[in-house]
Image (tube, rainbow, N blue to C red; front, top):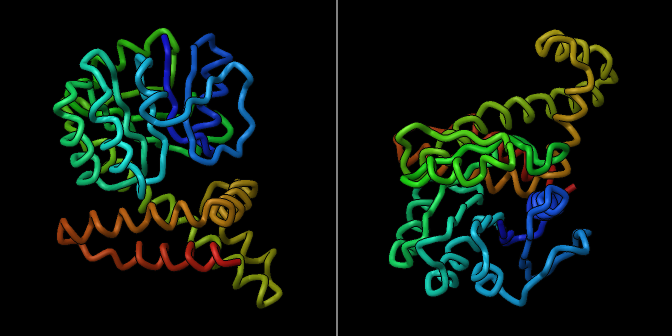
Length: 255
């Protein structure tokens, strides 16, 4: 099996490096590759060149360039290939990408990354939806990935579930960050840490993970919250708390 990884940032580089270790032939492309890659990974000159020879294409790019990449690939993808759109965007953008690629005949999968990629890498839980998700799971079965599908799910259904989950997880992280900042400002960090710990099962380490993860990935998560806000407003839900989460991440991204 040959897998193309488009976008060799944090997630893409982890996926590519792990797949090579599992004996998969990996090709990839990134306009500005800065992550350390296994020497066996063949980095091509463009998205189209990387995708042409692959059985499976994993597009792990930013949402802001995902439509452009789909347009680049529309002329080169074939019906025998699986194209997995992994960007963190709302269901409407996933559907738009599927429509762009429809004429190619490629099997388009809405593939959502359902947890932080480090430390599990390619074994991070993934959720697939779309007409060909069952065939995709069969294709990937030899790799024993943590891969599930939305039963009878359409393109956009996996993305919807991911973003709904993000309301909870990113929202909790925002509350923890603000509470810890307040505790430090009042000289009561130990007290507030104990209050948070009592609500999350005494997992003190998790508090630090919430804070550090929010700081490290603030910009990406801010864009994720923008996708959540867009999705909720389209559905007639007022995203009051999610807007607060986005503001917290925006603040952290500027530190």
